Image (tube, rainbow, N blue to C red; front, side, top):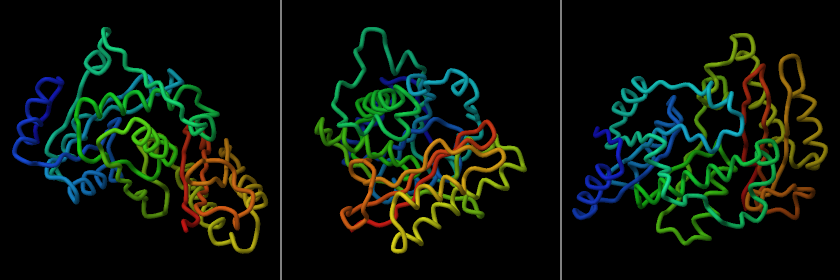
Length: 283
């Protein structure tokens, strides 16, 4: 695996590969890698000849400075894991490389409300930072395929919108959420959970599945209310549980009038914020 820290060195290598007719797949990450991230590299290999991952803890998408400080940095472990799945290239830039002072990097785009609901309502400015860094990394890597995970449903929905609106020459591919044996969605934040809270964090997955199993027996409003009640317990505080249209992220009030319904949630488990989702159906 080649490791590059500068744009010039990365582009020199990738331009050479493209001249040889190679297709490039790209998986952007914040590091602290787990099997969920590695599955995206494997997904990339199904479509591309050269698989590129980036590790960059992007300061512009952390609206809470303490969350940025706490985000785990495990670069040596990450490199070993990427090598284990035959990742071809790792891009590890410094912030000044991604955001040089003489370059205007913000993305000026109408997200049509996609960035204002769910995570956007609780993390102001988060998706502006996400769009900015993904657009910047796409400009740098210039891949044929962008690989993202389903766990961050709102992320890939917004990035897909950006790709279409800006007519970017890249295909978005979404890999399924990878889970621990007990169903908890894999996340770099899971390692911060205390053993007791970790053992009870399966409530997120159980609640999502309960909703999916009952969509023909109940309505979206009642299902949301019962889900909030189930997630409200000692050490657990739900920020939201919503059933939304998978295209617009707007609330679903009648399943018969929605072709693509998704249940999404964010829950504080102790001092760790967990997110998860479940596609209820897609017609």
